[in-house]
Image (cartoon, rainbow, N blue to C red; front, side, top):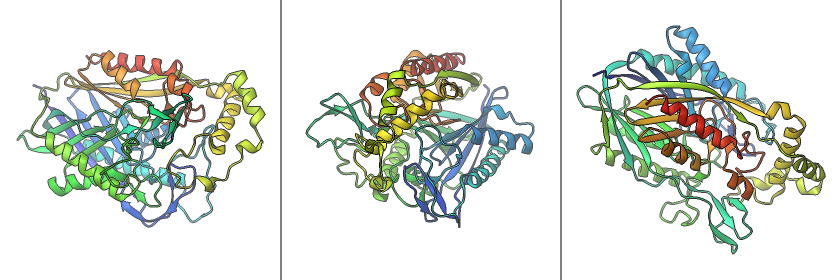
Amino acid sequence: PITMCAGWSTKSITPYGRKVSLSGQFYERITSEIDYEITTTALAMDNGSASVTWVSCDLCNIYKKLNDDVRDLVRRKAPGLKTGNIVLSATHTHTAPGTNTLIKAGGVNIQTTDHDIMSNKEYHDFVVRVVSDAVVEANANKISGFYVQTAVSPVQTGCCRRGIIKTGEAVMYIDTSRPDFVRMEGPDGGPVNLMFIRDSRDVLRGVIASIPCTAQILEHQYFISSDYIGRVRALLVDRYGNDFLFLPLISSTGNLSPRNLLTKDYGYGSMFDKEGADHMARRIFNGITAEMDFPVETVKDFSTFNVAVKQIRLPGWIPTAVEYQWALALKDTDKVRYDIRDYVQKKMEPYFRTPLALAKRVEATIEKFENKDRYETVETEITALRIGNTAWVSNPFELYQEYAGRMMRKCSARNLWSIQKTYDSFGYLPTIQAANAGGYSAYICNGDVDPAIGGDLLVEESVKLCDSLF
């Protein structure tokens, strides 16, 4: 049989000794304090004919420029590598610096009050250098003889974060004690999917985890942190050593968060603070270790390992003429005037029927209607790979999990990992039902792709790409 050739490298992307502006909130957070370092891990895999280097980054978002710049630099450092199959994914931590310098419609352009900080461009360049080094090193470290064992941990991580009230509207981070609360909009996240990597002597060398929960427990904090992900990594390293691989990937969970809004995290501690991140990390670590000796599938023959990359076009989210007139009527009125200080660390319902939410909807509606040509099409890239009876497929969204479920049951793979926030960042892709219910994550200012038809098209293209590997 053809065995897997694999190598990996983990490097720090922590801006030690520098003040940075953290990415992920509508308000500025400047810090140089470090909780858990932020890292990047590159895993290179091939079977002699197909290859991929998948890179996990403790960042809020991945942008096309970041992914492309890494490929360009790798091309210069290691001309022999197949750079088109270098794929970057974000854990969506909200306590890392940003790398983006472009602000999209409905986004937030935070004007810093402190000019002694590391700029987004400077951090971008730093990350490109480190990630490209990790990619080159991972490929240089490759040795043959590895095999994979798949497993599934039922541990609970991500939970639905949108609730429905009696009007039929949806509220992000709803206070479920409010009198008009009816139900959560959708189900909580499913299991954590695992792949254990063992060498030719059957020694456990690493784990790949697809976790249905973004790393944003600490999203309001004023320190640099890899959130619960860094804590899981530390627990694994403590038990298995510095050379142990941990490749964390976040599955499609655009409508989930680490918090259980129904139980209000009873027994978990504060899921906005370090104790909550510690608890989540222990839960995931215990879930990983519990499944190590109970594989679902053992893949020793890598002759079917394959990778496919496709450029796709999706329809942009363009407002109607009626919506445009609605926005014009509200523009410059008191209803859209807000003070960002009113939203600092507000943890419940921060965007429901508030001036900030309305202002961003109005701003995006006007911008997208008046500049239709710029927004009518979204061009992006998705990557699929096959390991045994499992497939992975990427997307550049905070993708509602319903789409991932549809992909899983439509494709030929026995199990499908839908990995979000990969290659680029186009905001949320909600379902049309969610968009009709409104609420943050389902407004026109929150996403670039039309949920009425774009989601169906993404499912179709993703399934087609996965099926091409089977």
